[in-house]
Image 1 (cartoon, rainbow, N blue to C red):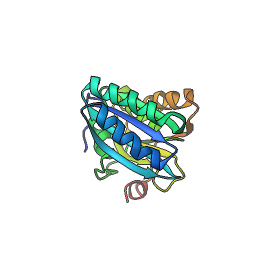
Image 2 (image 1 turned 120 degrees about the horizontal axis):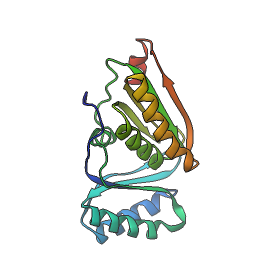
Image 3 (image 1 turned 135 degrees about the vertical axis):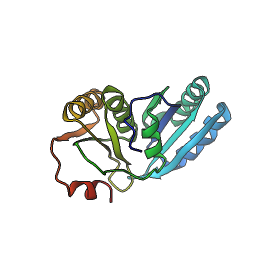
Image 4 (image 1 turned 60 degrees about the horizontal axis):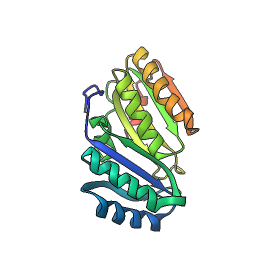
Length: 191
């Protein structure tokens, strides 16, 4: 987990819905549409449903299209990343956060799961950063956030690029760069 991010990874897509019941219907529909593997399908705060799935680009694209059609009026946000940063995918999958050896710290907070993942992927590919953690709408009112560490210039660059994407979508809550974090911050970031 100490590897610098920025490589290429698997194709993923995400649908974020305003209905839990519709979420299960959409999961069924996208699985029937194409050969994809569901990585996450769960209810999150406040009563939303998130579906993250992977597969070949054509299959993921087809399943995303079908899922979006089925979600219709309950679709909050979606994303399609043909080569997601693998470390980011590991954190989404539940890998333990790593806040040891902090350099500068960057935090991106958004109003949706999809916008945080998209911003995190953009930030991680824009600069030499190490992902610390990602929190996706579980118990935080539907908001999500991601934290990084790295040299101050890289953190500023990555955070700026990721924040620009979330801001363009009207989903940025806040971006923070902490140039010289206190040693105690590591314990707080990765309890």
